[in-house]
Image: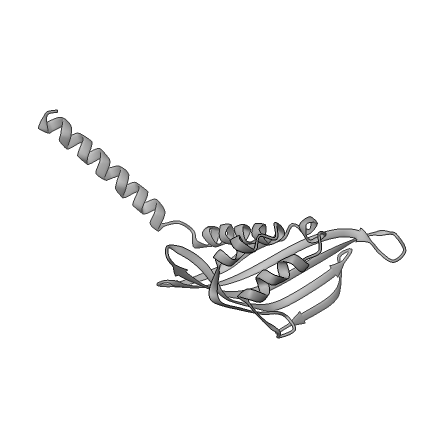
Length: 168
């Protein structure tokens, strides 16, 4: 291979690496965390404690809307207690904002889910649940792990009418 040909290959290769690096650097952190939440939701709905555990930092702590705290072990243990109807709810988590500083990210998010079921009279109703939260993620071993989760607000609606709302 001539020097001239090799120089063109090297220049082309350098350009590909530069473009790939720019694309990686410009990746939208909201999209990346939404994918991580979707993966976590999938593990929970599948009741896969091993996969969920791999996504939670060892010191993970969650504070629910009632102010009660739960550890990583509690979260994994509670998967078995999850009612089968939860899989029908298909929770969707939207990342509202991400503030990243080094290997730590603060993520504000909103989870929504909906389920149809009969009421006491046998009439089908639609329950909608919306929760906002503030999460802290840490990057360890090349992966983002959820370290802390705090539920900030929960709203439950029945057929579009708010029946419960609580905020911390």
